[in-house]
Every structure is written in structure tokens, then in C-alpha cells.
Image (tube, rainbow, N blue to C red; front, top):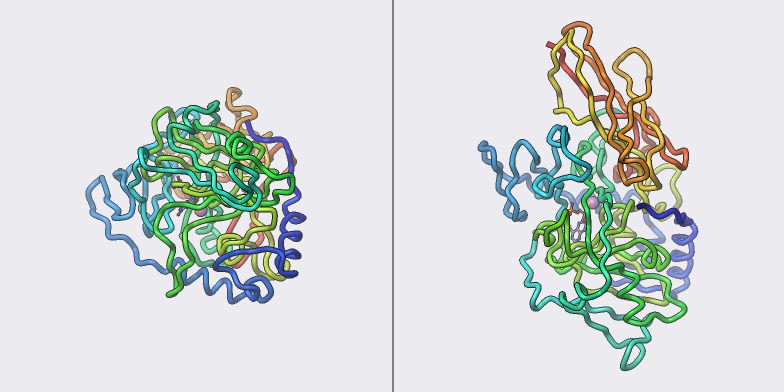
Length: 425
Ligand SMILES: Nc1nc2c(c(=O)[nH]1)N[C@H]1C(S)=C(S)[C@@H](COP(=O)(O)O)O[C@H]1N2
Ligand SMILES: [Mo]
């Protein structure tokens, strides 16, 4: 179940930034200027970061992506510049979780092939008081982790850029980055050991501030600059709360594309926090930085703080389990199904609009309190022609979905009501 703790993200972020500027924080690959002179320049960098050529796609039903191991069945996944977006219609009639064959993939480079037998998780940093001396690394093998107490939770992983397409398509303000519609999200059952268990076993000092997991996939090079391995710090409070080191997804060992042998799962937080193929975790008594919390995955733009605002929890979104665009029979009653979710807590209520005002959707009771909520609503398209379907949800914190999402230069956290086109025939 989602955590009920709330974090003052802005507070933690501001503290990080103050310590950074006073020279008390560290971050390889991040310069002081990055934080002082952020703004438009950062958008340009991010734009360069996403300038990777489109992946050639065969017309046959199973696509191949050179950076992704699993087959991309055309009815389940749409290739998107080296990533793969889930097709929402493939969730109709499915259970609570997204089957692994259609779970979205977001890779900065490519899926590495790792061997669990030789894999090690290395914890290091001045926040450890493990043997033999402070600052010495502590290692765990795959079997060591599997021998620790296990937990299994349904958790939502969503790309911060999910819905970015609609900044351009609905609001006329395109932003750089992967052009996700709404399929950059999924809920899976993740089994593993709590990061807290491993951190405590390694031995924490009393003054730990941040922990930073790092992936074993290739270093990320963009615009001729090597930004190193994918990594992003987490405040210790979140790290000790509901974060998992997961080795199973939906009852099977993690598949290569989703982080084999072990990945981090940070429920409700932007996908980049859930580092795949984790190899090291830095534990630090001073705030940590990486390009993934300074150049990318911050809110830049008019009305945003100098240096950008933090991005941690996902906002509220809703999606219909229908093709884009859908064809439905006119004059016949159909059951529209969909799902809504929020990183801040469970969904409280959902409404749909088929053109004649908002009305409540019927919620699947079994999903109450979980990371996402299935719902349904009946509709009889009155006449042949084009229709627009809309859905919007409110979570338990009272957060809802505006008609128009607030702009940010990198196109994160789109929470606007999406207008889903339907042709009735
Ligand atoms: N090591 C590593 N971890 C990573 C990434 C990556 O490229 N490398 N991508 C991140 C991003 S941006 C997202 S949205 C999620 C996607 O997880 P998935 O591919 O299992 O759906 O993984 C995150 N973890
Ligand atoms: Mo992401």
C-alpha cells in the first residue's frame, strides 16, 4: 500500500541547494553553474539529450528494438525512440497489474545483460558505519538479498514525461523529450527486500541525508558529454520508508528490460527514481546531486524557482482502455473502462464526460486504496460521427486534474484532462 508519509519536497530540495551553493554538497558531473544559471539553457541540454534517431520498425506484429530485449508485440507496445509505450487498449479486460509482456520500457541507453551469479550491490559513502571502518563499502550478492526478509507490493512506476505529447497536442506548447501519450506507466507486483533493511544491515550513521542508487547500464552520453551512469539521489526519509530493492516482477525474476537482477522501486515517485540494474548505492551525510536531479527531472520555466523546482511524486492522471483513436458502434451501449492514479495517494473518485456533462464513473471496489483504480462507465454513442471522451480523477489528498496542465519547459507531470478521440460508426 502507498505510504501515508508526506515529504516536504520543496524543503528538502531547498536545503540541498543551499548546501550545494555553500560548497557542502557533492555531485560528479554537476557544476556549480548548473544550479546557479539554470533555466532555458537546461531545456536546450535536455533537448539534445533526447535527440536520438527513431528506431526502424518492421511492419510485422512483433517489433525488435536493438536496445530492448523483449519482443514488442504491436498490439501491446509502441516503439518510441528506443523506448516502448504501453497501448492502453491492451489493458482492457486485464487484472490489476500490467502483464510484463506489455509493461512500458524507458531506457536512457540500452538494456544490459547481467549475470546474477557475479552481480554485487555495493553500498559506499560516509553515511555508513559498517565494518571494517567508516566509509568502507559493504557488499551484497544476489543470494544475500534473497535471503533477507522479502516483501511483495503492487507499485506504480511512471515516467515523469508520461503525457508529454499533450502539452503539444492539446495546449500548443511542445516540449522536448520522449513523446509519450499516456502509456508510460504501469503497476506491477514487485517482490524484493526493503532498501531500509539493506541500509540498516550495512549500518547507517545518524546523520545520513541522501542515498543515491546507480545503474549498471552503459554511461549516458549526450551532446558529446558523458554524464556517467544513470543515478538520482533519494532523501533518506523516503529511502527508509517504502522503497524496495526488487528482484521479482509479477511473480517471476525481473526480466532484463526491467532491471535484472535487481532494481530500485520507489512507489509513486517519478520513474527515474526507480533505478534499474542497480549496482551501487552511495550513502551520504551531505546532499547529493546528479544530472538527473539538476539538468533533467526538474520543473523549469516561467513562474518556476530559479534553478528549477523539484519533481518527486507523480500527479493525478486518467486513461481509457481504448485504442487511440477508437471506433465504437453507434446506437449500442458500450462499457467504457479505464484507470486513474496519483503518486500522492489512492484515488478517491473518477468522473467521465462523453459530451453531455460530467458524471461519476463506477469504481472497482477491490482496487480501493491501491496505487491505481480501475473504473467503468456506460455510454451509447447517439449518432455516427466523432466524439471526445474525457476522464478525470481526484485523489485522497484532494488533488484533481485541471482542463489545462501547467506548463514546464521539459514537459513533465502532465496532469491535464486528456481528450480521447472516438469515431462512432
Ligand atoms: N539504470 C537505469 N535505470 C532507469 C532508467 C535507465 O535508463 N537506466 N530509466 C528510468 C526511467 S526514466 C524510467 S521512467 C523507469 C522505467 O522503468 P521500466 O523501463 O521498467 O518501465 O526506469 C528508470 N530507471
Ligand atoms: Mo522516465
